[in-house]
Length: 224
Length: 197
Image (tube, rainbow over all chains, first blue to last red; front, side, top):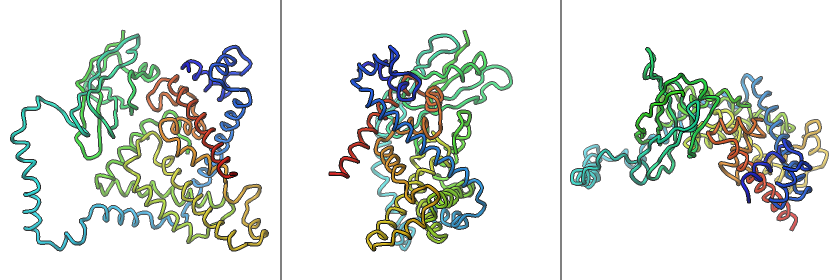
């Protein structure tokens, strides 16, 4: 299954390409898709468009509503949910404070021993199940070109962001842009990159709820 | 509700807001509560669209249920859509679920056909079964193809805009779109075949 044919199949479904064109015929043949099957895929695309249209119309209507039923309860419900999730179970609240403190110290003791006796990790950062090191490793092409990232270790559940910092002038060190990434390398957005100043620094940041974010060293880039 | 390609910063702001809410910020929660007023608004508008199957009290209860689901799922909000767009999915799912249960009960009790017809809006079915199937199929498909198909057909983005939105190449967006659509078609076919057999 050739990737180019899959790309062309997407264009066929989106009606950007006609099935009787040479490229269209080749893609259909390569993928083993008949004209009637393509029509079914295009019909599915039309149904999705129609569903999107319904959603848009409902959203437009929703914007005109001032005080719909249930709106007055939103704040109180959220406060209740936040309170419920942040509160200790009732049985624990009845225990004396000194007993809870002693129990917590006992539970933390093995961790304290481990931290005191482990070998020097040498600046190792941890996220998820193991050590992680991230870095921006290379830049190719004009106008900054694609940026490649190296991620060593598991980043399960973490989100990756690319941060772009100013280098020159009074704004030096200021965060200019932040892009949410899926875990794909290389990263490239030519249109966005054209708006960057001539010299910037980029940094990859992995973050996970409840953990300290991990940052790569900043990589200096210059427009060629 | 359509996200324009230029709202990247708005989505990052939403992601930050969600995290602050999860971290227990009271100020963030108040802002979030204001944003979540979209839930009763969506449900009321959907109710009108589909022939008003629910009364005001039902809608208020439904809003509560959706809000609880949104709260429970807030950790999964990734900022690829605005909070309102993301919340809409839960509204649509709960609304359809509740409507389906209600009409199943009525059908079992043998409602007069005229009563069902009275509930219908002009030219619209009471429960949009086709729309429902698509939504369930998309949820079964899952990311990343689910997100790409939603962005293509619900947010009307081009492949280049989708690629920019989620930080992949346009060609990757196309291959994932094609594979997702092929899977979704097979899935919906199986659902229809399963219902018939």
